[in-house]
Length: 139
Image 1 (tube, rainbow, N blue to C red):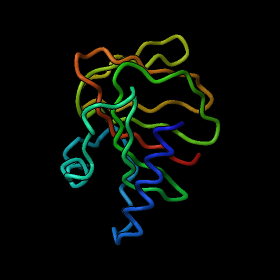
Image 2: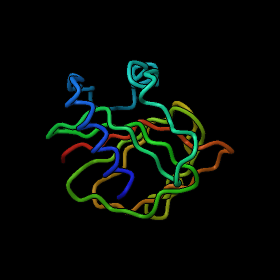
Image 3: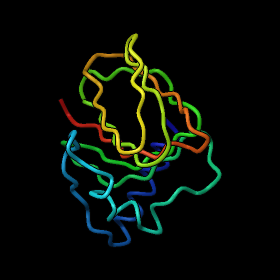
């Protein structure tokens, strides 16, 4: 919760300083990391280096979707979404998403969508933090 709150404050400050609101396309299995280069390559959208397990930088927030770059060092706790789809596009590293009882092994370039009402958690399996585009889309 804290990483998202800090990311929201950062995003609001960027907007107040004149950053134009973005409206990235909704992720699907045909997207590649290159389609997010506009944000991923920005100097102000980088990992701080040291962070407390999860670091978030918001790309955009609209009523339809929230899109962010997220770094996960070791794991993300169990959660369930009832009103939004959660979508991932892996930019760097590897991790397992355990969705209900199924383990999905994701690598750089992988796309995955969590079904509604399905409990899931993330375990990083790479030596480096996993960097992903995370999108939560209204159901």
